[in-house]
Amino acid sequence: MLALTELTISHFRSHKVARLSLDGRPIAIHGANGAGKTNILEAVSLFSPGRGMRRASAAEMTRRPEALGWKLQGVLDVQGQSHEIETWSDGGAARQVRVNGKAANQVALGQLSRVVWLVPSMDRLWIEGADGRRRFLDRMALSFDPGHAEASLLYEKAMRERNKLLKEQIRDDHWYVALERQMAEAGARIHQGRLSALELVRQAQERAQTAFPSADLELVQTEGAMPETEADLREALIESRFRDLAAGRTLVGPHRSDLYGVFAAKGVPAKDCSTGEQKALLVSLILSNARALADQTGAPPIVLLDEVAAHLDANRRAALYDEICALGTQAWMTGTGPELFAELETRAQFLDVTEQDGVSEVHAP
Image (cartoon, rainbow, N blue to C red; front, side):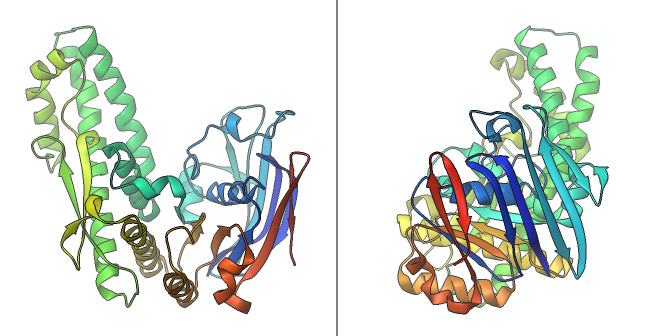
């Protein structure tokens, strides 16, 4: 079991103070638009590495107008062992983490807690740019390997430095050697992490009995093929310098990859499916990600589903709730009214969120 059993939110977004006592059941959060439901899910998403489900800066998360900084405290049940987690930001500074009273980095947090999510902004995943699909895939890879984030940061930092040299038309090879070595090492790790995540999700889809459609997923390159090994990627970067100098940016590497999806049963590209089918495919991938993590770690991750009822009919909603309960995950779900979660009955905890004078309040019926 992996679940938050206690959560305290302080000066975070619209919440001045909120204290929640929870068990391992799913949590249905309902309330009017703008009441602060999604802010609770964002707080929970910060019990994993990264910038949370909105990808916001620490300064953006603080409650206004006070802007005092924010703090989240939680008790995390990990396979029957309780861990006290704190994460906070003072006055817009980078967020900090403490585990069981000791300072920790985000990789250590990721080794304890796995959180996956589906939010409305992801509904257009298949029809928008490749950046969003890469982030989706990298988040999936990060859920299996907390070190994936470190590789991504190292790659992006080295690529920024290389792109700066390219824009300044620096042609001396010596300036590029160390940067390309770093990019090749981190880039190969990123690529292999993505491929591994896709394979784990594919296997989880094949084993699942689900009401949701499966997706055939493939990692493709915007142009040409992604070198498979560190040595090949380093060689490709060297060979591409002349072309990159003309473009003023790096044109080969994992930052040029894209995720291609097909509705397996119909053989239709995900980008050409209906809005409802695209939503169902995303739900299927999140559930498969959770199943694969349960196989890997022995416990399903915490799952965040913001406005999950959108584009799902009543039968699909009921099927989703049944699968969540069968998986045994602590799923946090939001919707405008309790009727959207009626099929859960006593299998879930219900929270009502209201807003008054700019302050969000949480009530347990």
